Image (cartoon, rainbow, N blue to C red; front, top):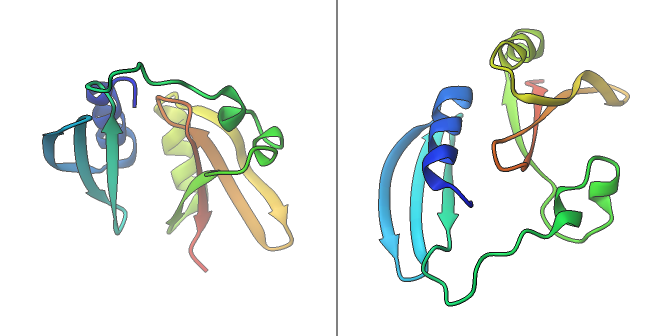
Length: 125
């Protein structure tokens, strides 16, 4: 994360996570958040000898995001995709698609977090 304070705030405000701990590490700082039944670690490399580098292909708009090998989406399940989609829209987050059928029976809403990471939400089956 380029701005750990902003990222922690975004995940708390938008997705309802709670920051359980923030602590320095030799390379920078880590924040451990909990919510949606998962633990999420946000890291910053503020103490590295070289500045962090953003690799643009990893943040390409879909379907271009499929070209680089690496992480694609953080995926969450929600009880009601329509309600979740409306709440995300009300928070003015960047929505890539809203309640889109990606494959037969697979409907999702996709957003970007404050750093441009891709997040997909699916209804619980």
